[in-house]
Length: 113
Length: 109
Image 1: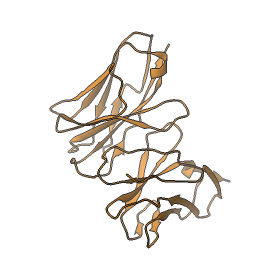
Image 2: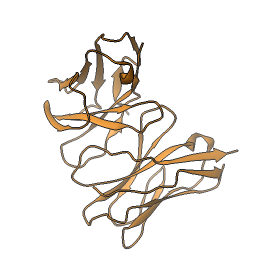
Image 3: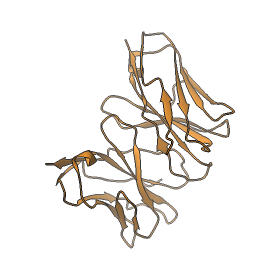
Image 4: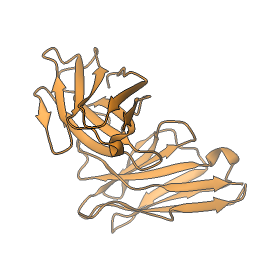
């Protein structure tokens, strides 16, 4: 079965640079979630989108923004990168806005030097 | 959403059943119990979820006590590939998953 696709899988950036992470949900899934997992930490919710509209917001820094496009893929844009942004970034998708199982992608490992 | 409490770590012999407990004493009647696991640095993987009744799928069984204050995830025949952090998550209205500390399950050969 098709799974959530994330690209790139690995990304290395310098401080103060920008990064864009992409997420392609499971076909027919219309809801996308972004999570951040720092070294040795548990995943933390950042933001989610349903039908191209932001639905929930967690602990996402103001330097980060995200959107969902008409084909339901989503992009997480990160600017003025800091060393502390080094983390695994996971995208998950589900069907509908109501309680539904989230399926996670393999993640993007971002390293900020 | 209700808070959960899980043991920090557990060991299990390969081929034996792994029983992972979770306490959620403040759970309300319409909150579900979800289990996810994360194998080292991979994306969290959905395992199973339930509301009141016990549930079983190809991966695991979920036993929820009658008062719903605790549950147990059972992996019937643990393999080395089941070594992971297992998260018990209770939620209803919050669409985002709140990951607690989880249980590090180590399956020993």
